[in-house]
Image 1 (cartoon, rainbow, N blue to C red):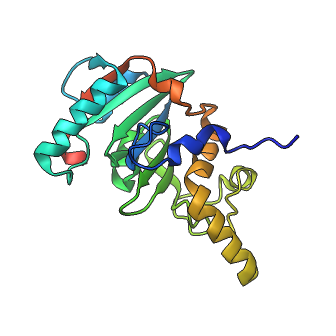
Image 2 (image 1 turned 60 degrees about the horizontal axis):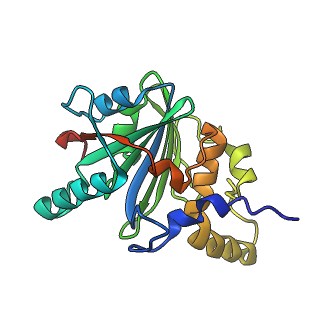
Image 3 (image 1 turned 45 degrees about the vertical axis):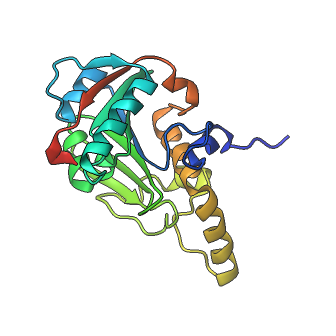
Length: 220
């Protein structure tokens, strides 16, 4: 029997408004190795010393109000963090901070960080940074076009999840790959993130309380 390695992550590609995907069509999920949620909030610039515990629905309501007030150009305004093993997972609804190259260098100081962004009105993104340096970054639909201080470091893991680091040799294979990544690229980068962090982002991760704080305006 063939195992579908993307099955745990297809929910993250659901259309906006789908009950299977409560994150919507713009979001960023970032993973921080060996940091607790309070420290993650501090790095996002939260002024609240220890954050506030909220359900995912309460976070969604806070973000909705912020976006209504600001027009959405400043992101979602809040980040919710939950512990998963030795990693902390940060959820930015309607946000993209952690996938910014400049912000990633700040967020990853003294730790390992992986961030995946979905943005249906711009482009999806993947970034891997360690101790203040972006190791590799790429758009899920173009894994062969990577940037970073050691852009080839994840090549073996990328191959394993269907993100070939090299351009296909012929046009037919190139078109086939483009079709696959246009449809499944986001799920594939979440599978890559799981290979790096050993954290599989399943919906039940959103069931427990999140530690929530406001994002510093300078990061949005």
